[in-house]
Image 1: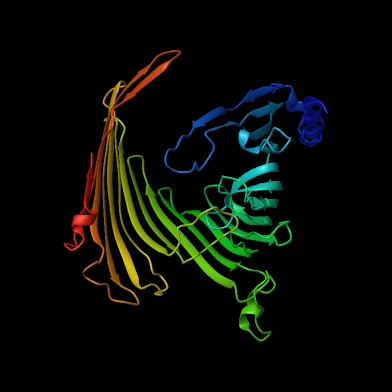
Image 2 (image 1 turned 180 degrees about the horizontal axis):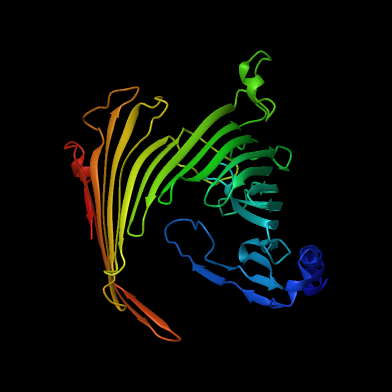
Length: 436
């Protein structure tokens, strides 16, 4: 089929649906057709000696984010074309369209949505969804494929981890605006244990199931004071084929209605909150974050787990002097459930300054100091090999910027120094370093 004719029949029903409800009196005031967006072309050349190649010697991909606007209706697209998927006969590896009108938006194709950092947070979904925000009501629903099935290929030189096909859905119900709201969220994902045609031989792959309950809120307490809160509980079954519990187990009565519960099921919690004081020249943020070990959501790609952070971030902006100062100070530790042999504590300090005295000249400086030490967990650390260090980094980057009507030039000079001081004399000769 001709590609233009195919695209016409694919998108014409969507466009017609949204144009039908538009106010006819305002159509004449809108431009009939507009297009905007960005395109990127990436090329990579790879060569290795003395080891087996870990990827292809040449690769490329093209990404685009064009947006069509037809009589005031936005129809954004997203696509990725690459040589990686030539075994598939379609030219588009990823394609999405999200037409919107007033308070309604559709999502079709490969979609990336973030509703909260611990539930649906940027996971690519191949499917369809809808977001409705009339007045202060907030509703969203999306369903589709979270991961496609990947067969193990023992004849390929490239490392490719096999995986089951994963389907899932997420929903959001809330009230408020983007700056002040409260949302309740639920995400459910499950692997299809019959989606692989062959049993992997080199990799152990287990079919999993996950349900996540979350709350996300933003609150404007005063004109200058704000409070954000995100909390989630994840019930994760790492192997749906594992041995089940007895019927009188309290675990079943709590979570069996959400997913299959067995001996491979665990429950994890994650929390982050932030208070912000904001004026024209001063911004101060106080943050707290706690993510329990192995917290996982099928709606996100990665979490740093078993971590507790307390951070203070003051920043200052002096417009007339064209000076900006950013800083952060905090404490971090792991072993939240007291099940590790040792507890690692880190103290974080960062100071940055950007000064632009003229339109042509500017300079950026940054200093960071990270120190860490091991303390008691299930065991007492051995003083001969106990970790205790200070890592520091200084960066100075002057710049010259020349802006003309049709072309601009930016010249940067980057000076960087890194060094690590080991405070344990028994290991310092093996770990201390300095890089300029």
